[in-house]
Image (cartoon, rainbow, N blue to C red; front, side):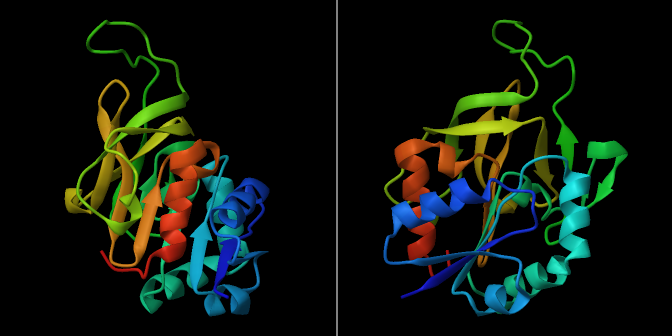
Length: 216
């Protein structure tokens, strides 16, 4: 039986993520843990996150999990970032008057803005971006297996990722403008949306992760 560790630093919807993973693959042992050894010994690792990024990064660092995440990345085992768990992988976030992140990927996290409008209708768009939106896959990847192009996933966020290298963008969505909603490089895949809230396609994404060997 394979093991997947869901990193617990007190800032993610851990129960929902764990239950979705268990549903996607009943034969997988899902561990919700902050224990360094359990995380490093797991076959796959999920880094979730909700809330203010300064609090998330602060707790990750306080628990010494920043070094563990970097070790997982270097190990080659599959790592999945979800929502703020995607954002913390970047260099810097504009949230909370500026927050240094883990710098796994070069790039920043920016605010959508208070005056965001739909370019087609001119209508004001609400922030946070909350609800269902289409996800346009940038290229083929094992994580997209059995998920249709422009499938809809559930979002809740006010900040979005701007990678320095556009080549790591695995998918985009449109909310006033087109922005990155998934990134991938080597054994790391991360998404801005919440698969655990995205019904069938979200469960399929988790199933794909539990079958993924960490290679594109």
